[in-house]
Length: 639
View (cartoon, helix red, strand yellow):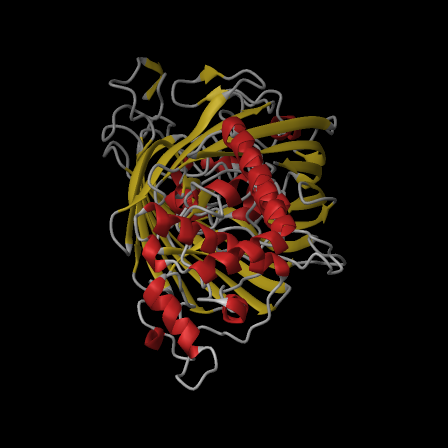
């Protein structure tokens, strides 16, 4: 490999010049690098949006986008003796007599350098310097000088014997190259004698250096041969949780404590280094089905008659457990499903596009609130996201919709995101009705013919401690539902109107978080959902509102342990007009409230336990229901 280093034109001058030959940088040991495939072989440079943050439970445009490994051409060879003439190896070697013995501290970090063709290019070398003539001779005779990127030489810097050996090895290669290219007349006899003596003096160091490089190359070859993929990373999460509850509807017995699980595997692939293909697989053992049977909510008597929408739902269970809501087919416990398939790719410095056949609204929109994190943060569905983000099945947990949209970064503090989602885009036509106006594919069919949503979020960060998100969603549903899964009134949102009546929704909301200290944040949201008949067969409208406020604590009592204290109002029907009723038949209307506390205890970097509970006052907006408490002990494994 051709490496341009400093060598002396003769005798003692050679030693002094070689002492200042290398720019140096402390970097990990060969052994440390050999254990890290990415450090040896890859460059991680996915750039989708400056505001993107991935959560732990799934991979999305937002949730902490982890860089996908991409082959870096500059690091395909780790041989210290081979590099293109326009690159320079930065090598730091410990002295064999140091306290660290002869441990190799640094490896071949390639950095672009320009060849020095004149000694005047080195700003800190002056004609009055004692070694100026020898240095000038090296430039003119051998051309093996390279300075630091800032144009300095730093000839007075101290060096180790290993650094000297590395420089000597490079100079020997340069001399051999001159001889091989018929320019041996440029090599003086006294230079060869000096180099020979130096080679003998540093033979042990040279042998150690070459041996360590050989060992590194062997380890690298093993890693490359056994790596999972050159373009794809695999990560995952497993949640195992015990759930118990008391209270519920009058005359109901408390349900048994249940043990449930959810497992997700995510494949994150990049083809160019700037794009990202997310493929997510999951399985879970939550039950429910079309009528909610087998679920905690149904046992409490707090679920809707169909599709088990309820305020007693935990954060990590799907919106429609045990059923494929697209065609009402059953989903057996722990069957494997594709819950995410999404491709993100930048088309300009400030514009990124995304599209997929299994996506969620929360994949594209920053969550703002620190309580979001199905496996790590809040334990209820209520606390994690603004209801406007959840409308139309936007956070079903099963990748319900096909979606496409964009992220436009107006500035570092402001960005706009929008998407169009269609629930049954893969179905060419609807199935026959099983209820009046309700088909066996209740959400319709086709990209533009079934239930759909157009959603947008403007995210604003006026300071480093304040995040604000403003949301709007316009939705159309084939049946009379909200699609949030947050309360039982989600199904039959226009109370008193048949389920088969299609509806349209206009939803607005805002979320804000203020980190008023490094470890404490105040966060909250407000939302209003306006529902109207879309069929023209009835005249009906209603309004739902919801709000939440909470304190989030980082590193509480110990580093890595988080906690949350949350209070708010679940979705509540505040108004109704026309044929719609403000209070469903038989209910005693009352304002519902939600109180929640949890504490995440991090056992290791990959294992955490979260005990917590939430209390529902006037659950499902009905004072006849007993105050309900849901307790959760969640264990989360990430890998």
